[in-house]
Length: 441
Image 1 (cartoon, rainbow, N blue to C red):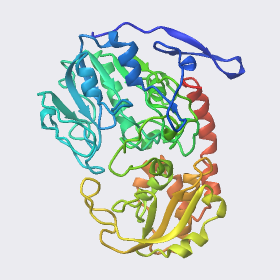
Image 2: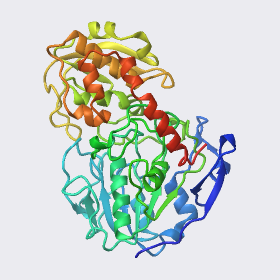
Image 3: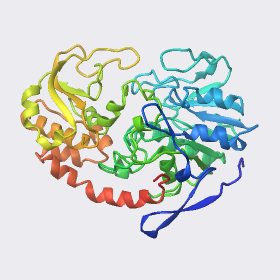
């Protein structure tokens, strides 16, 4: 069995005189000093940087496998692959959906290759002229196989997430932890910020019957955790009927606070996938991704995916008039006309390709007030009311939401408040579970 030394466990006091235990490496997170940029934002130190500065003993001289993509950068824009290659032998690289370079469209199958075949491009990934296998975790297999891991002593995960359950990078994390447990390989998770704040929890929790690669375990749509915290939950929590029990070490960030939005961390934003170009997109995404489960465009094939929604049969002005004013808080929403087109590297066949659509364009004006789920559910209910013959849902909506309730309630004419009420009990239960695994104040 391959192993590394277990890390110490420190007790960190929580509110209400309650204490919890969690693995913590090196400098105490809560006492990490903050650097400040010229704009005054706190400079968060990433888990990757913490590893390099304080914990190279975990990988020095070992054969490592890295699960990474174009977002696996330090604050200076240097890639994990290069930074670790000088400290350990990289035996295998694994790329998630959208590929190692992050420029493969949504849902496209990706083949295995070698690092020497990766070309420089617009994704800030330098050329790699090394004969190292690059395995796809969005191809024939989505879990590293025994053969893929046979030369690996330590598996490392370092990918920027967006804090939403149906963004598939966290499914890769869950499956990679399962593989590490199966093969007796330690796994390191290098923590990164939750870009849309790790302080907010909302949305339906996935019923185990509806678990899939879109949502690997029961989580709310917006789970309010970093990937490191989530890895701890995956590893230890049995509320879903299992716990992975892998040899897990989370390398935490320093200077991070959970209420931070990404642009408050002092770190440069890298688009996390072809249709997640900006932080503003990530803010609305927990809601408008649900448009993928109906016959309305979610904006793929436009310059503002997830911020532009509609269909050929929609009248944007009528649709906007039908929306309750409280669902528009923190946003400027205007009627718009758009035509989805093929965009190389982003989308090959968007909904309503080359057809003129009407709908709504969203601009975030106050993200602390913005309610993406309320806005989206109200929009779907309004579309059903205005266009009962044209509006259609499909079973993919059940996967995204996590059960059949949203689809059924929209079809039966429920309002958005009643739909959101169905999520409240589950959210409270999840928050109780989540509390045990939180690392940051």
